[in-house]
Structures are given as C-alpha cells and as structure tokens.
Length: 51
Picture 1 (cartoon, rainbow, N blue to C red):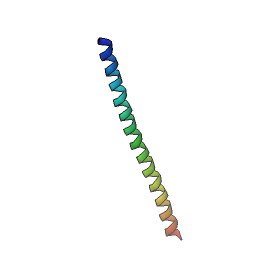
Picture 2: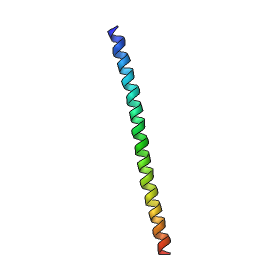
Picture 3: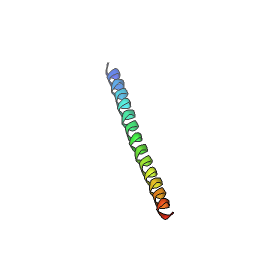
Picture 4: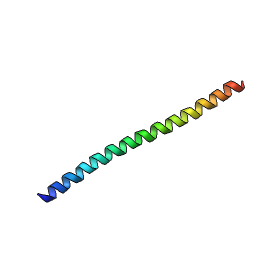
C-alpha cells in the first residue's frame, strides 16, 4: 500500500514537473523570438532610415 502511494506521488510529481518545464520552455521560446524579431525589426528600420 505504501509503495503504491509513493509511486502515485512520484507520478504526480513527474506530470507536474513536465508541465512546468513545458511552460518554461514556451516562455523562453517566446522571449527569444521576441528579442530576435525586435533586433530584426530595429535593423530593418535602421536600414530604411539610412536609405
């Protein structure tokens, strides 16, 4: 009985951790994409201004 509860808690922890990891990965990807697009757009604006 005790082993079952430990396994259940472990499984729950894995599920929660995977969800948290996925959430963090999404946030990191969004921030990277945002910074890259901002750099790209600022560069394009700079080129457009220089022309």
